[in-house]
Length: 215
Length: 215
DNA sequence: TGCTCCTGACCGACCGGTCAGATAGTATTG
DNA sequence: CAATACTATCTGACCGGTCGGTCAGGAGCA
Image (cartoon, chains in turn brown, yellow, red, purple):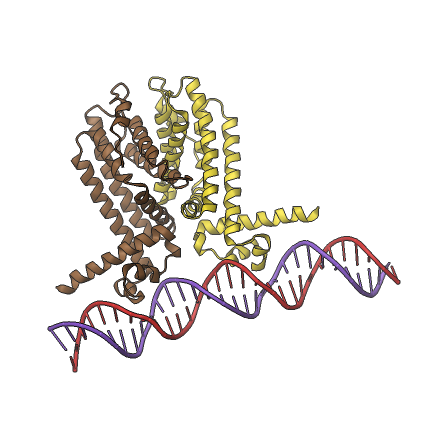
């Protein structure tokens, strides 16, 4: 089946083009033509492989969350111990200013859609379900080992994710996001660990800063 | 000056109409005509009192954040002690499912604009600055009294706000937001206090649930 | 010849913004 | 008091431009 592979390829190219466009302009300001040009094809192709603009973007966001779920699982799986897993998550979610801006601009746009269109809402629900599962895994391990304070794991996972998202919203409105990117990442790590760690078990807050990665 | 008062009145009516429309449809899908109809005037009036659609919405968001700042300050000022102040904040931010949905839909839309247009970004910056100031006041009082764990107050305030926003994003993608609204509010209160309270000083986590208000 | 894939002109709908004029309230004049 | 002039406010038809979606046909291949 040559065509199936070709179709998958085509859709992928369109998704990537759509992602870059939506990150820059926002869903409503992106035209099918913008996407086509960015993908190096003609406008007609966009609606040859997708039923509508909504369809294309629904597919895009679906693909985006799947890929981020996979990357989170990989990063968490590769790290040893709950504290390191949290750090791995932070490192993954804060890769670089430009990638962050692109992703979270698209993300905010997506939230606006999810808050109003059932179809997008379902994708958002899946996103949070996946995150909660990953986050809960970390939280439960931390509790089991006595490193994290013992509490409702699902709720804790939810709050953990809220801190990520909430800090990102704040970062997006900073005057000079590039300048304070590292500060936000380190702060995020510090705050998450402060929130999670059982008192006394201090895995030395300073160690957090020491291990902070350069970019 | 009759006209000055009249103008202020008119602009207010338009703002309110715009708010209800943007909460339902989202910035890009609201037309000036929608706003005019909702306000009970003709389309021309919108651009008689505002220079452009962007101008109208910038004004709307400015007005919105000012009024929320005022209400937060009032609520916090009327409450006794840091824990009660946090609770007052939660009660204010979670008034009812319908108000929440309206406000946070508009809010998410606004974040999308703030992330892309300098003019809106500045309004967002002012919003967070005001929040941080209010939040820090509470945090510092809690620390001074030994109720909250001693840490960087600004950072703590920032995380506190992140938890609000992050949980709201999750709530917006819930299948049945009305059904879990109370659960989210109580959870928000519980998680905030867990995050803030110094260990041992337990203002009894159970007391939090006991005091939860019915709606 | 027939098929898949692709192109871009085209269509109809929509929308922000403009503007010529209607309307109504107030001041001025006789 | 009535007639007139002036002004602030309001109206909605209209314009120019845009965009999602359609489609007739072209290109390349079997």
